[in-house]
Length: 275
Image (cartoon, rainbow, N blue to C red; front, top):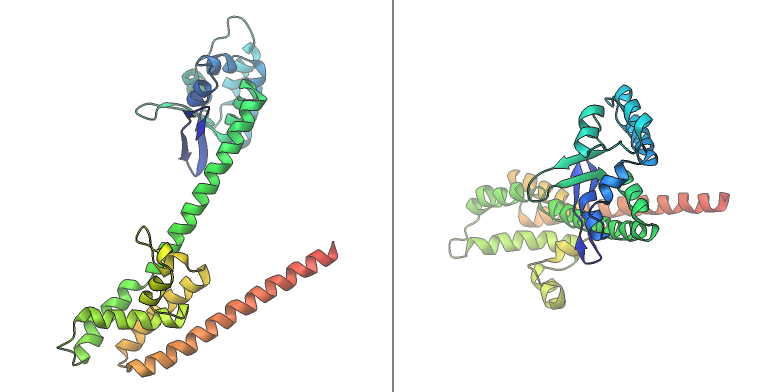
């Protein structure tokens, strides 16, 4: 994250988001803020309560010492001391390039409030932006993953079964791959890869193709067709036979998705009517 032109690192620990408190303090212009924050009674109470909810190994007996001494002039705990004595997991200390004190996002937002309500708001807004970016990246990765499902199975069947069966010595093997892939492209997307590129020159930047812009439903169908086509090739079906069978399969899947969407819409309409 970037706040006040200063980077704030975010990391994943056991599937949870942890934000660097050290970076937050620097961004807010108060390098000593973390040390002062840890000394207050409200902070210790909050940390202890968080740990008791989320950490079954939290040492409550050791926590009592911090709770009873918080706010006193001679109370001067370090992050390491808090972690070591209470077995806390909401705050961790890291060394190295991205080192510093990290805390679970719940605790980080609380620290942001202590720095200033305005700074907390900036952290929340920037964190939400980061999560949206992460979500888009995950969706893109899922698209790429689904587009590759069964792809090797499909191409191996073309190479090992279809090519030897065809008397295409004078033709390049890639022309057979293109033909087979385009059969699936036409069935799912309604056009070949070349046709799509010609119609969408502004979308092919960054080595992207029509599958990158497909819906999840289309990618699922494509993955299913690749598997089915490989099976049909292994059974010795001719290309014409396979096209008819694949087309029938596509129609059934699209009808299934359509019925599912209609049912979801019907349930939403019922829920709205009940309100």
